Length: 335
Ligand SMILES: [Fe+2]
Image (cartoon, rainbow, N blue to C red; front, side, top):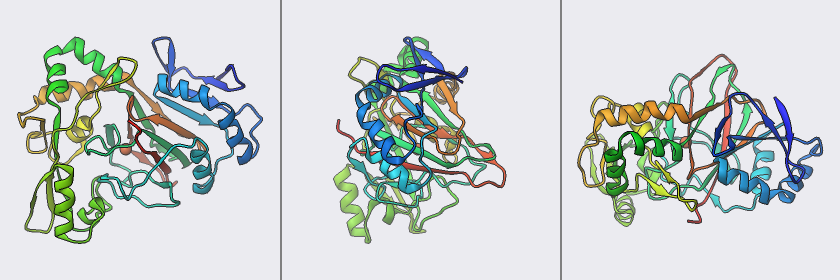
């Protein structure tokens, strides 16, 4: 790992596996310049260099902080709060993953079993309410595996435009609809096991229906008490201020990881007008995404900030007895 000095006292590291796009590395890696021995000094460092750090994040899509004195949910909470961004709570989210809150801002990342891969996605892009940035903190890295793959979704879509211009235009013009089944009770063994009561922050069927109506969903109650919900047409591609187009959706995760979707996508994911998305297109996009993916191999104490509008993330499977603990804090959208 080579160290490079930034302009305002920010020290960056270079590793061989970093990608380079438009002359910038992805992700950017910020290392402790030895001035941050305490949490207070780290907060002061963030605040003194916030403009530079934000500029790097906006271009790269992901920023890793390594070697800073962050070692608990509480210190991570303070670090993430130092940026002054509005909090996005798990409670108000429509995320379908089961999570546990540690502090007001901080909760567990997806608690799915360790052998389950969480495929690439933009956080909560399958719902109308998604966060703008994600803070990840590795409290305890897995013995083997457990990296967080980070994918430059803007570069993925640019590649798709070249390779399959018709399909790319269809995504852009039609958007996408997702059908999900929310269980009657939380199921911690599933990557999408959050109950409908928890997901919608309601207690009764009437309140659930009122919330769904407000969000523009259509729905159906199943015999076992599960709730099947269909989103309104959501964007599949968004435009960023710098002119880039981003494949902003949950299609890879849904196609590769959601139960039964790879065999038969249409009951779960369609274009926004309800027409089927070609299976070979989804297959190719999932494959193409790997070309723009950097695997963040966590070290204890690492913190990463991901721009949810530019980069996708996931979770590689892992093994070993050491408990992998990666915590998350989310930033509300200001778009
Ligand atoms: Fe996620």
